[in-house]
Image 1 (spheres, rainbow, N blue to C red):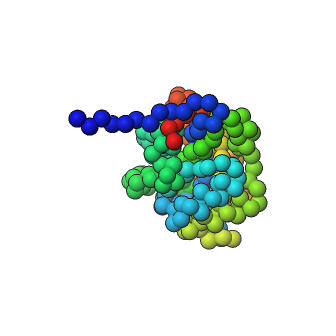
Image 2 (cartoon, rainbow, N blue to C red; image 1 turned 45 degrees about the vertical axis):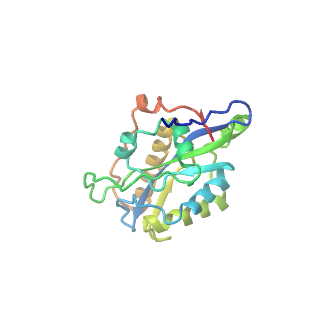
Image 3 (cartoon, rainbow, N blue to C red; image 1 turned 135 degrees about the vertical axis):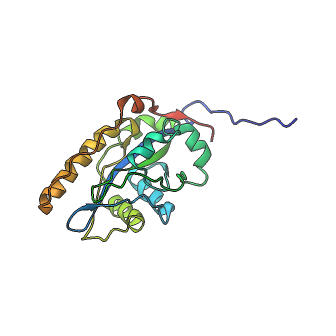
Length: 217
């Protein structure tokens, strides 16, 4: 009989913890600010990981593509950051599989959610909490845009990518509210009618997401 050996979760100040974060975004194409499905895998997840590391100054495990609102709601691992870190810290990105078929929204903007796991030692959790939600540095912002623009088929100076800083996944509705404000302003500046805000995520679902979770490294 073969027994499965389970790794023990370390405790103490040096124990690794998985902190679930998310970046909320929308891509607007052309001067008409049209929305399109931009849920394609990133060409080089290592570049994205490096850009996020510049901003957050911790080891980062991002998803390999953006999720839609519905995909995020249906994603069974969104409230299991420790398990995600155990499974994907070595490959360095979370495979999300092919984008699911969804209702055709025409030219309406789409909401995109990029799940991220930050790997933080217990001793650094309090300090790291101060970095969550801070504005992008210029260097990190350029690196982030360079890492995602090819997958989204965006043309700099013609198309527009609106996105938030990394917030805790529990606080995603704050990010969605910020994206709504940015999107409304973008349509106003383009002289186009604003199609309306993105819906917030159900609070009862967000409340199940742990603030952080220790895991076996």
